[in-house]
Image 1 (cartoon, rainbow, N blue to C red):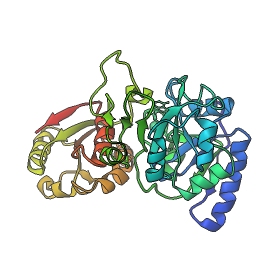
Image 2 (image 1 turned 30 degrees about the horizontal axis):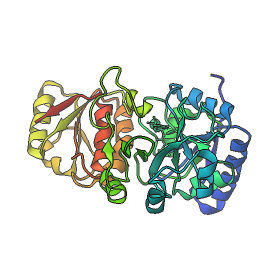
Image 3 (image 1 turned 90 degrees about the vertical axis):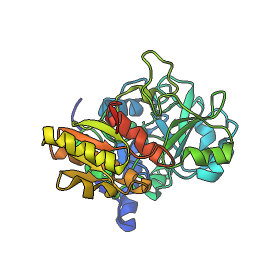
Length: 348
Ligand code: TXA
Ligand code: MG
C-alpha cells in the first residue's frame, strides 16, 4: 500500500483534546481512517456508511474481507440508522450495559454497506463509553472500527502500540492513554434462535444471563472450531492475538504450574513465564511477567495485550502462560490466551 502521512493527535488532556477530536472528526467525514481510543482497546475507525473508507481499514490492517467490523454509535437514535430492527432483548441490554463494552449483533440496515458487515445481513453495534470515542462519533458519524492492530497481532491498548502497528498506514492516531478494560468488547448475537455469546469480554456471561435468562455459549469461544464448521462469528476462525513467541497455556494450581515451569526451564533456559502474583515465589529467579493476581481478572485483562507485546519486544521465543479460571471476566482472558497459544494447552 502507499505510505500515508500519519499525524498524531493528543487527546489525553480535555483542553487540547477538543482540538484533536475536531481534527479527527474532519478526517473521518472526508473518508479518512483514524485510530481512536475506546474503553476496551484502540479502534481503527472510518465512516461506517462509506465503502471506500471502510475498504481502507481492511487494507491498513491486512484484514480478511469476510471478517465484519463493529459499528460504533454514540446515541440510541443512531441505532435505527445502522440496524433494520431492534431485536428482542436489545433494549434491556442497552439499558443495562450501554454505553460500555458490549457489542450486539442486529439485523443490518440498508445504509450500512456489505463491506462493513463482511457480506453478512447482520451488523455488530456498540456504544462505547470512552469520552473521546463518543466525541469523535458526535463530530463525524457512526464509525466502523475493528481493533487498531495489524491483523493477527495482539490488540492495541496504548497509543504507542498503534504507532508500532499502523504508522504510515493510517491518516491519524488519537492518543489518550491506556485503555481501562484492555480486552475487546463482549459480543452477543440476538439474531439466532437464542441469544448467543460470540466473544467474552468485560460484560460477563453471568451478567448477560441475569438480564436475558438464557444465553448460549457460542462454539469456538473456548475450544478450537472444527475444520469446515459453520461459524457464527467470522473472527473466531482466524488466528488471533498471537505474539511471535510460541505460547503454551498451562491449566492448574500454583504449585502445579510453578513445578511445570521449573522443569521445562531446566531444558530450555530461554523460556519465560507469564504468571500470577501467587506464582512468583514458586518461580524463584526464572524470567517472567506477572499479569495480575489469580482472581484479579480486571488486572489480567488490563495487562494481557501489553504483556504479549512486551514479550515480543524482549525477543522471547517460548512462553508458559498460567491460565485463569474461565469464569467472570476470566473467560475473556482465557479466550484470548488460548488463541495466542494456538490452542496448545497443558493440564498439570
Ligand atoms: O472492543 C471492541 O469491540 C473493539 C473496539 C475498537 O470497539 N473492536 C473490536 O473489533 O474488537 P474487531 O473487529 O477486532 O472484532 C469484531 C468481532 C470479530 O470477531 C467479528 O468477527 C465479530 O466481532 N463480528 C462483527 N460483526 C459481526 C456480525 N455481523 N456477526 C457476527 N460476528 C461479527
Ligand atoms: Mg481485532
